[in-house]
Length: 309
Image (cartoon, rainbow, N blue to C red; front, side, top):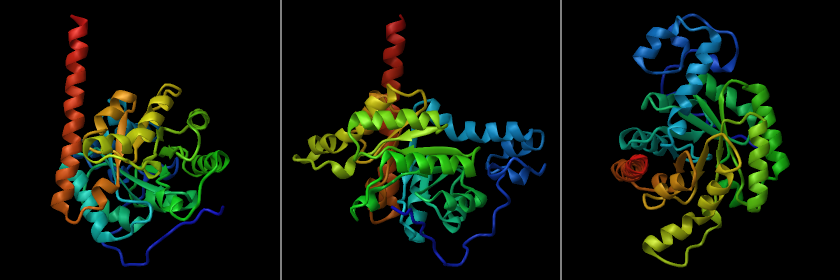
């Protein structure tokens, strides 16, 4: 299968961003080169060496993963509707998410970083599309969000995923890389692929499974049924690799905490947000999921403290 890249030709919404240092090993001493939007970070950027700058950028992107509280809101790999993407990004920012994931398009990246200070991730299955998005300000790249391909009967083999990963690492060796393990593989094969991806230097493994789940019940039972495949993958993979696992696809405020309990370092939510009709409803849903994760985290911390007594 030949990977494809989708772009838009609409005019730029924002002024071009400065050169992103994650693209190469050569840096300017200007603080504008650092794609971090914290003023404190900007003030100290000029004193950082290139190696330290890269490390600081990656640490910022992965911080919530290491704290096991990452919440990534996904607009969709083929969603180039600027109005909808802007609403999703705004909802992520106002609702308490930690990351936002958009289609791999420089104009969308410029739009997103004008709306939020959250790390922006771009998704594609074409490694050659990533540099332009990183140049525009993306701090994380994702090989994944395959749902639109499954709808056309296209699936990805482990060999294809590994080749895409190797090519991406060759082009962007210093950029935080997340790779989705296809749910079309058996659970043992998903675990095996995750282990190989870890060996290739991937920073985050993302699971999926919502598309293959057809709940037979409504309400809470249906929500749990919907999340079962991705929860099972997160449980199995998180026990086989040392890098963070993001549980994604088919999750809700009910099942997001289950993902963390299963071993995930974060959750990714897409259609539960981007299919809503207005930004107010999107913000409310993101907030609901964020609050459910926070409550679960507090309960876990309380239980851990109790066991120490």
